[in-house]
Amino acid sequence: MTRTHSEAFKLKMVKLYLEGGASFNRISREFNVDRSLVRRWVTRYRHHGLKGLEPATKHHYSPSFKLHVVKCVTRDGLTDRQAEARFNLRSTGLIGKWLVQYHSGQLTKPLSETKRAAPMAKKSVDLPPADAPERSLSQDELIEELLYLRAENAYLKKLDALIQKEKAAARSKKRKRSKG
Image (tube, rainbow, N blue to C red; front, side):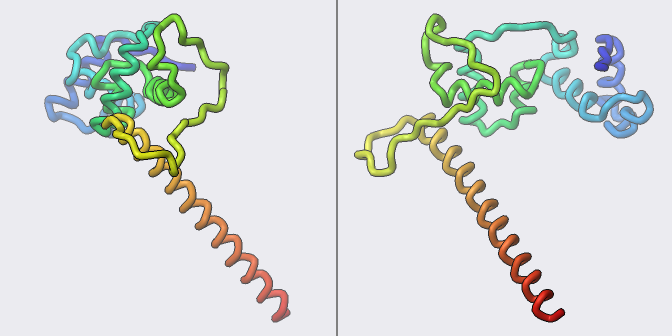
């Protein structure tokens, strides 16, 4: 069950922290509130004042706003938490969804063409083939490609490490059997 906290309560926690009287951990223990919540309230308050502490409401963001957030995240290298605080979003999960929409091309289409994606639909990133003739790419396209290649590289490294670990375990198992 989720609890909602009043603006006055949130403001009290923020003031305790900002006045230097208590750490996130102390406030969290003393008032039985998750540490990350207190940190989130402080960050929102720093960025937006009292408006950042208002209760969450259902909000529909325009495709142009989503595109602006995604471009800021990729251009400035913001974490989801930083972007959530900067743009006063109510969930870090929104940014991941918007990145998927951006990579699938949904955020660049006019509003009338965008359709809600099926839940848990797999999205693929369409990159130009490696042997395609060189063309000048925009900075956003280069950043997008770089992020994709970094993720692919990290995935392959982890896969290779897993394979090596399994091979080592199999060799070790083989040795134990041959000794016994």
